[in-house]
Structure formats: structure tokens, C-alpha cells
Image: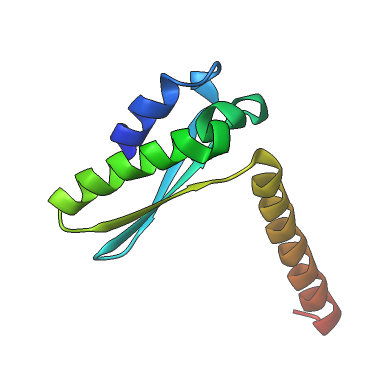
Length: 103
């Protein structure tokens, strides 16, 4: 599935080397997270969301052949950086608490 999405998306964007795809899945459901360059997001979404909906339709068709459900999400670079920053902040706070406790 990841390769299928990569093939479609990389042919639509100006910066195919900046496309990042992550699969998060269980036994019957698969979530595909797609991150592209900020300037390419409009190309992926398309007018009134037609391009992303077409990609999702194709993806659901392929997934149904394999007996799984799939969900495609677009993640903005800023959100991804924020998540990393939040994780780092939590780690720093935990280390500070341990130091105060004398561990």
C-alpha cells in the first residue's frame, strides 16, 4: 500500500524526494500518513479535494481486494515538527523530575 501511494503522490508533486509516508496499522485497518513539502499540499488535495478523494478511492479499492480497511491522512510538516518538539519537552520534564527526586 505504501508503495502504491508513493508512486501516485511522487508523480503529482514538484518535490518527490520530500514525500514521506508512514503506515500505522492493525490487523484489519491501516492508516497511511502522508507528509509532503508545504508548497505541494495543494497539488495533493486538488480543487475542492478532488485529487485526494480520487487517491483515497483508488486506495480503498486496492485495500478491499486484500480484505483490509485503509485511511489516508495528510500531515503538515509543522504538525510533525510540533509533535517531535512536544515529545522532547516531555522527556526533558521527566528528566527534571527524576533529578529533583534524586534518582
